[in-house]
Image 1 (cartoon, one colour):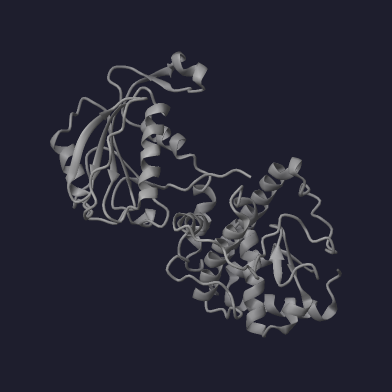
Image 2 (cartoon, one colour; image 1 turned 60 degrees about the vertical axis):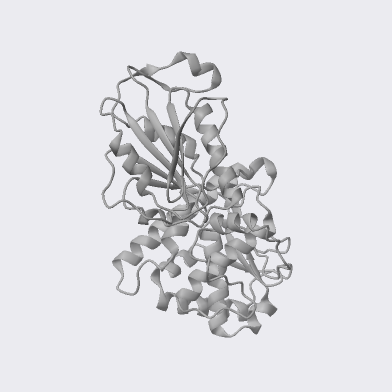
Length: 391
């Protein structure tokens, strides 16, 4: 349906009001085309364009119109449509709404009645909120705000973007790549405008969600291997023994890398998270056959080490008390061998007592959804353990 003059004026007025408040949001909004559709109950996006129901939009107060328009712009700019992959559409929509509405509310916008809020989780990434809902076996209720569309409404009047592949399954990967490129450019421009403007800066909470655009696509096993090969060893090309397995691993000369894996078994780690941790430990063993691996279980005390081998048994978890990271790192420092390349991997939610000084060996923290912000780990590198789901 063509954008009627009345709705067009309301949309333009909302964009101007957003521009007065935030140059970052306003710049993103300029990249989104707005159309009307009677097929959309409220407002929605297909990842590229915004569609509003004229009756719904016209019945809102001006401040609510600003929030609704910005809500859909953020869904599109943060790639919530292609990021869903094969996740449950309704539950993913709920998670994305919680995150977006949290950002909007913190910026002082007025959300319409019925807008989803979850102050305890809205600071997280959409993937983290989704995973936490799955862990709690939360079932999505009625979703009047279901607004992430797999395809354009059939009454849309705007022509499909000439540079955007269609919604057909055969074009889905190309469409995702095109959307990522389009909104990446929009985000970069919005950042530059915000940084050079006196009218505003990066909105609160947006950095984490923008960071999840890349975090959510990290295959952390590949990340871990890249991390490990940066340890001070001599490498001599590829080890041909593993080419047939698809493992193009650099061959180590001399001693192999010694990996100390600590699994957080404190009371804050639920059984599902613990199962995920142990599955990742098994994956490390099978993915990197060069490694010598010792497993520790850690709550307020340290249990282990348990030497592990590919295909061998993994001992049952021990723990359930408080959380302290100190015993693990104190053990590593006390038994440190400067002649063996060593790296520590700690699977945890990040809430515990850290050592006052950084250990001598490199550390990789693997953090649960909803765990401590990766920027708050006092040493080492941290990566969020978020399930990677392709579309």
